Length: 469
Ligand SMILES: C[S@@+](CC[C@H](N)C(=O)[O-])C[C@H]1O[C@@H](n2cnc3c(N)ncnc32)[C@H](O)[C@@H]1O
Image (tube, rainbow, N blue to C red; front, side, top):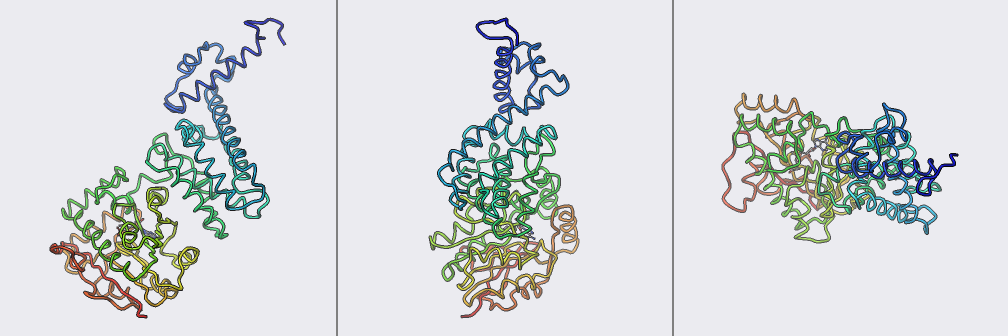
């Protein structure tokens, strides 16, 4: 150790102090501007440290800045872990309460300062391989804290929790997702992980390993392929869509300028239909729930019955990661309708199939080529008398064939194809249900609450079936 002292510090102490100042300055800059846009010279200026000293602290010229990012990340992660440790210190054994407490503490810590969310998620991912061991260590330690080491499924639960938090927290800075929603989604995934479903585990692991492809795309949402959920959101005037979705919708509008009207008419039908069903049924399953556009199924039915249970199912990451739907008390679950038995099994945790339930599938099967009769049949098999089925579906009957063909072409480039069915085929989906008046009709004509608008060139049919008591 050098014997020379400056301002009562040895040279080593002074260097350690300067290194700490660089870490603090880098946290500020990486957390606000981002790693890519922060130059070494800016960090030095902010820390009041010379360029030369920077390279004394970080001698690897190629990776000095990257090493600094690792230290910034580790400092932030350490603070997060300490915060969670404190929160759960009084609860030793594993319990959902412990997980909930840990999740809340963690989410509050990360969202307590936008720089933390940015460093822990976005910038850490930008750091690539260099930060991977640190990220893995942090994930392991958090997993032990969130899931509890003494519970056989603790790790699985924790992975689910971290997966949910990771996706949402990475987006948190860019969306208006509330911290309550993030905690709720994290717990929701934890509960899914509990059911030992391999799919849940795989989803969790996939999200846990999620890395953004670029600085801009900090979501695990594919913005290179149009998504039906996001296209529909754009058609309804929403903001949760990307250029690729808007371009696809523009093509639809060129083909049929009334395309937004069709989406709006479908939405208005959904509201009238679920209001009708809510008079008799207290549980709703909204299959292919989509990105929320107010008023949603839950808002409509809750006005009529505040105790109603609403569960939304979707397989699009934007629908799942978007916490807004959770705010109004809907449970949003991952589910692929093409695997109805799996969806039913998950639903059975929250829906009492011994009582009537309304199954809502509006504008869903027109994106699913698989046999809708077989799919609905799986749900029908567990639904009690008094249950209802709400369907809306596009038909090519009576539509100009050229227009239908070009509609199909637009959706051929999207995540799901456009599937048109004939009127009789759509009616067949109600197998085992009795159609209520006025039967299967243009959505605009189903119990209109004003003057029904004229049918559009491509028609959307809607109807409600019930299982007689
Ligand atoms: C056009 S939107 C309809 C949204 C809402 N049901 C409505 O009528 O306003 C279709 C939704 O179905 C979802 N979807 C498509 N294929 C699905 C599948 N196999 N499983 C679950 N959801 C699916 C899409 O992600 C999208 O959110």
